[in-house]
Length: 465
Image (tube, helix red, strand yellow):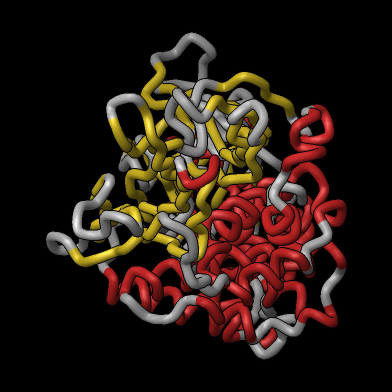
């Protein structure tokens, strides 16, 4: 944290001009932002003569745009009261962090507990979300990030889904966990702040990612959920579900057995009570739903294939799996062959249309699962890939939900996150060309789903949650 000096004032208003003289029309030397700390040197004509150490520049600011603060032990209770007031104020994160830094300087070490670290960390996380465009986006977020950096609040940034993701580095969350005075709620918030799936670097290597996942699992399992309120309990279960889904995916990618991790992910997701999360935190549940939905086939056991169609998977190039679909009458010559760098969930293979088609789940990314449709056409056998959604969705999955033999239609379900919004669709596709014939937001609105939906899909799917 910045070592704050005496005779200080905190800027409380964004776009506060630092002027060359104590006059309204004097030249503007710089634009100040909420949370900026200034050294006060004099006062005249409704202005304070100040020095900005961050910019190494002096000037004048209107008295009503700043608040003078004291840093003695007697000032600490007042600073803590302001910190508590600003903690949940959306848009006031930089100001709240500034007051938090002042409180940490003023309070005696014997009086410090986990509360100020918890409050500052929460505001830092919210500011990072704003700068990333998550939730309420503010044009001033970048300037506020520069302000809080002087207090030792650091961010990490990387590209995800074509945009920059900014994440708080979590130092003060770790301080909360190391504090003997931290209560169960403070510890839970700290763990949630340190285990966010969207703050895992997508370019991390397999070994680093495995170490990070192991650390996230350990942190989440240490939380005592019985002492938490309903909101935090559901947030905790949703986060565990997302993390265990990531563990299952990485285990499958390494060639290890992912079934136990996938079953834990499903169990944690089913323990979430979405109504307890409210609208503000509903996105955490939907993110976990998509991640677990994408990995759910990892918990299934591949059944022995019967009938004339046989699907085999063999290693291809480095990291590749090559699939060959064969007919029992002519096993030496595959009907069709295709390779992928994704994870092939052979337990999902389902023959259709009197063995003139077969569907298969393939997962190329942690939160992205496609549906491969092997089907016979006039020119022979072909493989079409159905993505979770059109356009450029961020994450999601599409899955086989049934087949109508009378009209030769494929029933599918899609859950997808696109441009920050969750979408769920149930569709009927013509098997011949996979063109959507009907679409609805609920399976009850499509007559074929009532009669021809697959019983195993209805039992196991998460698309009905």
